[in-house]
Image (tube, rainbow, N blue to C red; front, side, top):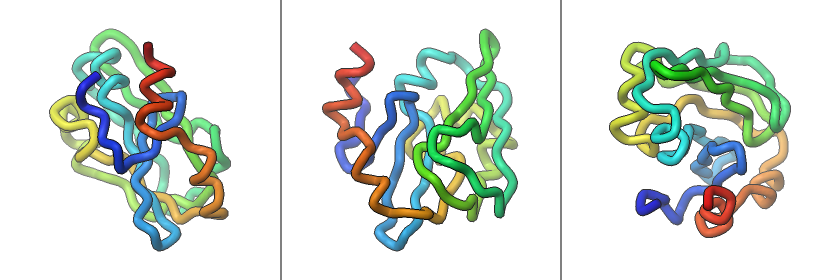
Length: 126
């Protein structure tokens, strides 16, 4: 798995998290997840303003062969969604780490410490 940016944090449920260091994060699915799913055809994102608990189902990504729930990596409030991936789900297949799904304002930034490093995430996929 060559495409695993070191500056991101990860979850065992195949989400990545970019910490903006201002109490907000961007969240997407990993390259491993999009490769496993195949060509995405549909993305359902949460409503802006929705509050979510860590590990709760927050979004859905569907490919030609299956659908998969996306789980919130951290607790917080949705502040923004990436409408480009709703309109063009294949953007996630083209670059999973550029095609973020949603942004959260964190309830507790200390939760970031519970996420996996790139190396630890890699161990969950092998």
